[in-house]
Amino acid sequence: MLSEYLEPGKILLNAEGNSYRELLSMMLDRSSVTDIPGTVDKILEREKIMPTALGKGIFLPRIVVDDIKRTEVLVTLNHGGLVFDDYGTGVANVIMLFLFSKNDDYIALLAQSLRLLNDDSLRSDLLHCRKADDVIKTVNDWEKE
Image 1 (cartoon, one colour):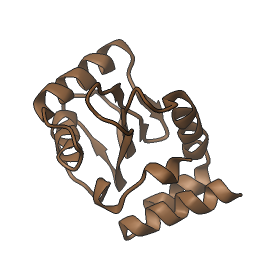
Image 2 (cartoon, rainbow, N blue to C red):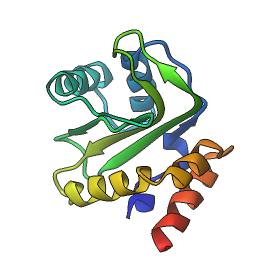
Image 3 (tube, rainbow, N blue to C red):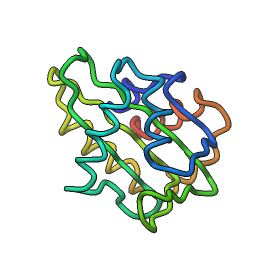
Image 4 (cartoon, rainbow, N blue to C red):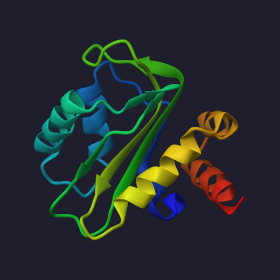
């Protein structure tokens, strides 16, 4: 369940940033990753090969991190949308950064997240959350349905 990986301290509401690199760095600053610049570089290298902008304002960057024991999910929400100087023309409203551990079933977690974010009403509810705890509750409620 996605909600099991969500923590209030890893959710940014109304985050701002002009570059994708800057936003990823801000998100990673809330993670257990020690080499933030190196991890950002790896994420951006992966993005060149397989972009994770899925349309509808959804970005799902992801990477397998060798030295973490448990998968971490970091979330950034911006109702107005972010346009990054270094990414192209896509607008980002929901960015869910997955730092996958080799110990977890990350394919199932990613699949569930895709189903969740394809629900227009749920995505709208997430974008209207005012607190990080509300984001977790919204996801948890959806998972129970």
